[in-house]
Length: 89
Image (cartoon, rainbow, N blue to C red; front, side, top):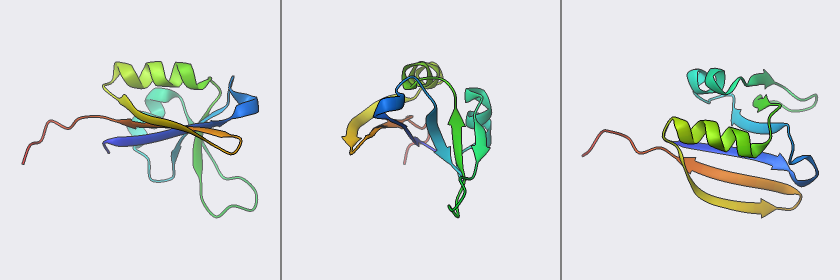
């Protein structure tokens, strides 16, 4: 999976940080120390960590992910990261 989205609420920029959905790579989620949760009323799961986004971004940088874009959506901050694959066409 070459792309990862992480997000946090503006009022919670110290954590928790949402780092993946139910289809995220389990090995990356394990590396981040994420726990899979399902919020009452949702029919999907998300991975969360207690760390702030800056620490998550630092960890992902160490394994080759780079920030492609960042935006604010309402009260949510979202980062899109990409990792170059070694496969070439």
